[in-house]
Amino acid sequence: MRGVDIVVDLGAEIGTKRWWRGMGTLGAMLGVAATIALNPAPLVQPVQPELAPTQLAALETVSIAPLAQTPQGIAFHQPTSRVTALAEPPERPRIEVTARLRDVDSFNGALRRAGVSAADVANVSLLVAGHTDVKSLKPGATIDLVLGRRSDKSQPRPLESLAFRAAFDLRLEVNRSQAGDLIVTRDEIAVDDSPLVVAGDVGGSLYQSARAFGLPSRVVASYIKALSPKVNFQRDVSSRDSFQMVVEHRRAETGETETGNLIYAKLGGKRDVELLRWVHNGRTKFFLADGSSAVEGMIKSPVAGARFSSGFGTRFHPILKRARMHAGVDFAARSGTPVMSTAPGTVIFAGRNGGYGNQVQVRHASGIVTTYSHLSRIASRSGQRVGAGDVIGNVGSTGLSTGPHLHYEVHVAGRPVNPRSAKLPIQEQLEGQELARFKAELQRMRQMKPIAVSHDA
Image (cartoon, rainbow, N blue to C red; front, side, top):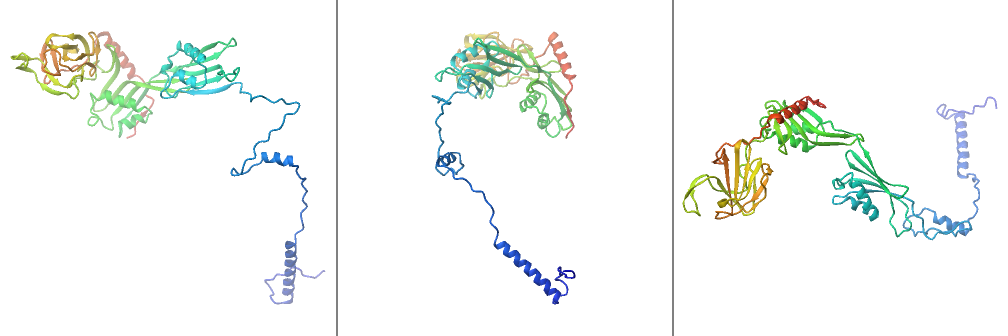
């Protein structure tokens, strides 16, 4: 075949003999390809053996089918000579359960709900009572339980072990010994009690700037409330002012954190104010750097929402029918309305006092004494410490009274004064050794280093 040109370029020499020969060769090749495509050779396929009827039935029980089809059920096979049929399915030898306290729940109730027997609940409660008060557990607290094997299904499972976080620094475990007794074990958790110190610029919003450090909203609200008697936050605070807070804070070695109450508050700028929380005469309050209480003045009315019915001075007495000095002011209100102490102090008298009827007398700082008369009920006792706003009795009409009202008097250095016009700065002042301890603690707060300082506007 030497000299025969099989490959022909059909794009050249169109119409010549050589071109027509190439066209014929192409047509022949296409015809052979079409013949092969339309008549394929059969593929060799192995023959599957037919399944027996029992095999088909067993296959249906494990086959996958739409749920709309009727289920075939599960095939049960008869035991062989080596298999013994059980009367009932066996139980798990032990069960791990997590009990969770609900919003309205008790420690014992959570255990009973988890399947712990009444006897085990009683034993556990007795054991843990010597280490913690389970009533202090908050809703959502979890209790990890392990219940063991029981002799029969009519009996509850015995408690094998129990563990829960009893306090921020304590984890309690209860385990059953080989002798069958429950034994409690304490797991002390190391806690760092270093206070959290935060300092920054007020910027556009004191609240948002403080919250940016991760402080709870209640702490920021406490800071604003503590400073409010001395600072007008709408007028006296600018974006360039600075703030500092020292807050109770605990960090457990297990990673949990807990933020407590505000200890120290400072505002620097147009108004420089420092406050330190201090316990004085059994009551916790904020004091200024000089040892004086942050809260000044007295509550204007000892009865909330009462109507002012009679003023201070000489007047005609409606019962005695003659002019007489009215050494106080009257507030008309419905009988039983609560009566509040207008300032912090100590109750020096609580009882019946002639024409004043049921009366309570309170001694305050700076030689001031307030009296509350004609009470229907006395809700305080002599020697009791009371704070501003504490209820000490209820409005009544005992003694020389024509109707339910409160007769309120204020005495300064033993002489009555007009409560509505006299300047009565009731402000507690730390003195002596207590003042020295206060200033030492204040200096310690000042030296604490903040975790960060923000300069964002």
